[in-house]
Length: 490
Image (cartoon, rainbow, N blue to C red; front, top):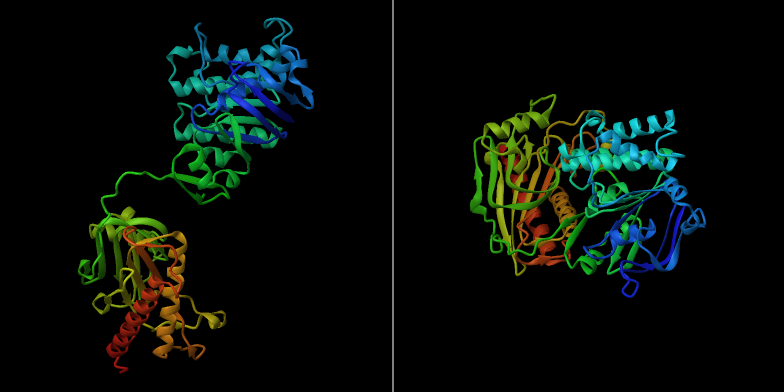
């Protein structure tokens, strides 16, 4: 365990760079150090490793002050990968990595052992530099050199590893390989790691805790979600970021928010931009819209410029609907990565598109509605039939700026309005003989221009919520009545 107690120090004793820094790192833990340039990150590592003096406080390894260790004893306890490497002499990769075994020698390589040999070979293999074993450093790329020095630090087999920007010069594949390996060493072998990062997202993914430095002081320390707060990052870096969850891990990620003027500032979507083709309804916008949907293609959150509601036959069957739809989009000159697409059993010509507005702004609602497979969701558990292609697809295009919270509220509001419309039209679930709430695979899309009026909330009592409620209800009622007429039921 490493303990840092009230450390103050730096290059000049009269003007210390880091001041009263305290924290503890447990065995097997990775602590990431963040902060802007000049905040004291590298200086902190140098003071911890004894390269720079401290004017106050102490550094303890297993409750023993590092000043009480001999140089070789200390090197067996702690390995350091500095930010910059000076190699005045020409060494091969193997020779460079082998230098990491110096603390374990009684005299200079006179006692080279099988353990030393295995440590060097393992470190080179772990970092992927074993194929360059006999190549001189000056003939390697910056990333290859960086991995060689990491191998040197690993070959030292110390209990504690200090890393100053270990992913410097590395492409994303080698960043992942290196940090995966360090993480594995921490988990399986109890390696304690303190690493400086500039990349907050990498630090969040691989570190157990983060320490945020600000002008030589500790601004925050804790788990990534406690440190990577938008307000806190703004205060330290004077830069806006947006925080969001990683798609696979319970770790936050941050995105830089630029201050440049957005050319879509006055852009609005109108009903006239919708096109009704033989097989689909389409909307192509001049600028991407921020979107959340339950579509077949590109569901979830994203920014998209093309929107497609494709009509398919009731007998449509496909082993991989996602790939088939992607191919269909390409055939019709849509870029799949920039398109949200859904499917319906209702002919494209039966789409109902209406525009609504109030003092808040305007929305366009497009609905295709057919209820041949209507379902009462509260009784769906009684069904044994497999779901087939849905028939009620709803688009709500909003000319305004929504928060993520308002996107989710807009989906709820739109869904409630659809259910109310089905109740109004007395659409029945043929299996349970109760009022239906939808069809088996309905799709819903909310898209916003993200300019104009700021809409923090979109519940039914807000102005935009009222517009969505009214718009989806009235448009869905009209679409349902059109469906009934087409079926000869009115």
